[in-house]
Length: 535
Ligand code: GLN
Image (cartoon, rainbow, N blue to C red; front, side, top):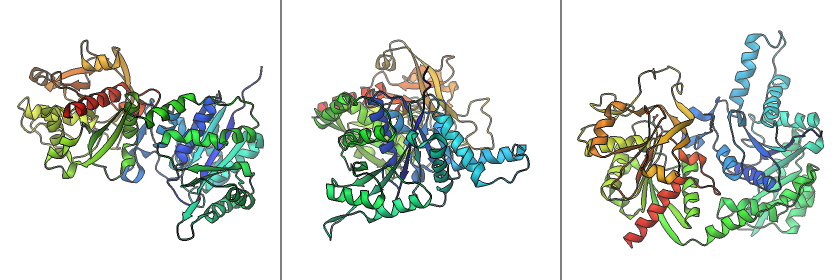
């Protein structure tokens, strides 16, 4: 019997950050999957935080949560959206976690008194995490965060350099992503930054097999051969990664440039041509919408769209399903004094959030959606605040709030539940990852999902306080999704509203372009309806 050999693709980035390495990796995964291969991913992050869970979303972007409850880098979201792979604890490793593990081993005496060093101890730990993540697949894409030349990336680059000798040249492929900049005054594309960053890579012993050039315009043959010559790669290994309108075009652009063919050649793999019809149909549908709507997203981190990455994508997917272009209007909740600015929106979404800043603005947005019959979707904090708003203005519980926002509130509609004792270590009491939920017969949630039992991903500390359930129910709020034991509120909805649904969980993490999440699809559909009624 032939044993499966895992092939390893390493993706590095040069010159600057935000080159779209994550999307490039996800797109390569999509192409290889379309060629019939089983793929997975590993994101290696050079920072010293153990995981991104406690990092500021303004600096780091969204924290993506996996089914098994790992708080990870947002690139894992791209990986799951573009392929059938499922990410977990093993698929995101930070320098902090690597060092944590090395230091625990040192304290336990595992190194038998030896001197513990970056090479080999840290590099061995990195290589071990690569092997562990790559079990049982044909190809693993390992993306190295940061930029080549950074001090922090060095142990990771050294580890992947060694990896090539460990598993053999034909089982590894090094792809380097770097920008080719257009200089308007000279009217020329400049290749020097690419050359310099490849030199940096060569200085640590890695010669890339393929160079992905991020650029505004297609590179002609002349430029490609120049890059090939100076960077010591084949001419057909210089790939134009041109800016595109929709991220879902990237796999198609890469394929036209011959990227998957070149990878198959470098890795010495025999696979058929990829079947990309699904991707072509998707782009076709996206380019020819039948309607256009605007969703107002009322949040705190509106300055950095990256912190709502999965939500944005889930809205786009919902739009794809009903052939509608979804424009997102970011509204800063801290500045939302007069909610009538939301009247132009076809739907209002209050996303996840932490802390008390901007909360009253969010509550005003919920009230505006409820009273003006504008479709409303609340996600996590957006569900908790919908409960507070309803408690205050419909159930007559003045000052109702979440304990997180107001310690002294007379009506802690959202609270820590008994047994959730505060642990000093931040994050320790979070409900993370997949939890089951039962949907009530006859509810909107049940008809949206088309089934009675669902499983969704969570990331929160506070819960709806069961002591208030009856009072809110009497006033007209429906608890349409609850934990199987009936204790935790998972979805609330308003039966007498065109669309008012809010979930304690994060449906956006599970939405994919080919499999839009039902809640987002239903929300967008409702917004399209609202838009046509508005005229
Ligand atoms: N801050 C809230 C809690 O911890 C909501 C969290 C969220 O929106 N992800 O429960």
